[in-house]
Image 1 (tube, rainbow, N blue to C red):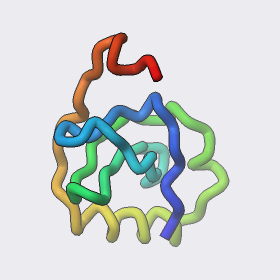
Image 2: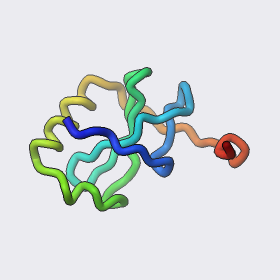
Image 3: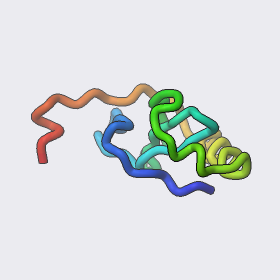
Image 4: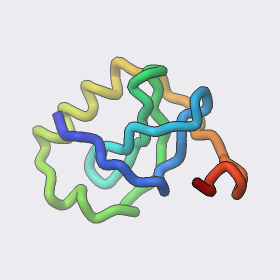
Length: 83
């Protein structure tokens, strides 16, 4: 399995407003929260790291996402984004 890449641009879990980063399936990027077993679609071709992965990585990521529930990412206010 490909390790999830941590990136704040990828959205957050609608339940806890955290993220375990994102994984790629080809040029498609998906954010995820392992604690709540959810994932969300980020976009297509936004991050170049997919180019360093193989079909085996993408299949492992498909398998990971298959065991999770697809949701919509939460939207945070500017105040919530300030540490």
